[in-house]
Length: 226
Image (cartoon, rainbow, N blue to C red):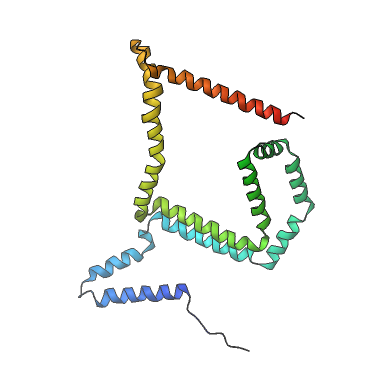
């Protein structure tokens, strides 16, 4: 039998680093108990923010689900379920359902939809039961990142820039296009009867929209016709 060399894991190094920090705060504190109290204050889970516990639970459930899905019995049970008549009948009903067929026809009528459908089919073909643990870890880390981005204090600046990127196009369209060219002329006409060239933008836009919708409807009828 070959002997396997022991290598310290991440948790071992984390415990060693914590002990070193505690000793450093005690021996380098110049007989002042304040640094030690501050360090123990941050080590106490009672003083942790709420998103700490949320992320710990996400990691715990992700690890538990990955360990369960790695079991050969669980994977064989999943394989037998996918090969069962119940699963096959459910797939058949989904394929024959009218809403599903309508969605597929709508997607296939667009070039972008065809590409998207090819990508989805390739994605589902590459998914197998043996990769479920990896997907579990991916979802767990995604959930942890979302919680960090939403609640962590050090992510305040990225959150602010994301809010600007999300809100600026809305305010730009509303304040620079909708108010001066659509809403403002109608309000002036209703209040004072003022007629400007901007007053005709709204009906012309509505006319072009109606023509575009009629053209799309006529094209869809021609495609459906035998």
